[in-house]
Image 1: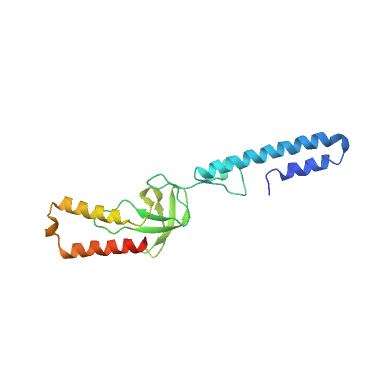
Image 2: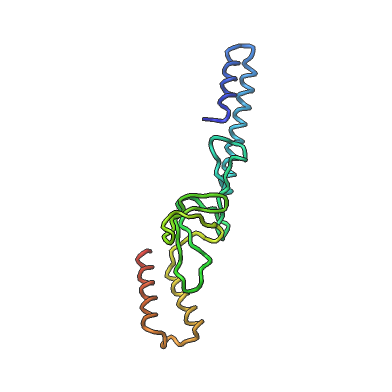
Length: 170
């Protein structure tokens, strides 16, 4: 379905009359330009994180996707990581099941139901790489100002486990 279907139907009606054929061609040319401009505007809007609602084409019916802490649009199915946690707290990752004005909806294990979350407090989740884990380990050593030889076996075992998992994901 095109936004110019009604105009094209009218143009075909003009085309039945020989004297009106030029008007029919002009109407069809106008419809072509309208369709091209509409397609271009929709593509540009989608590229800027706006989803068009198919039942109405005016701007009041468009929904702007919420943006995360990195200003990246959030879509249904994205995995989002909470960025406002304290050092040592586990990373909280949620899968987006719905979107709203500046928010997204996802299952909350803590509440046992779907809940609403502010998109700007989250960023798109990515699994840590081996480099990330090594960098974190180096930061731990630097922050604690300890000699590598004095790091506890449990800490070394924890990071070794994380490095093994990272290699399996690659």
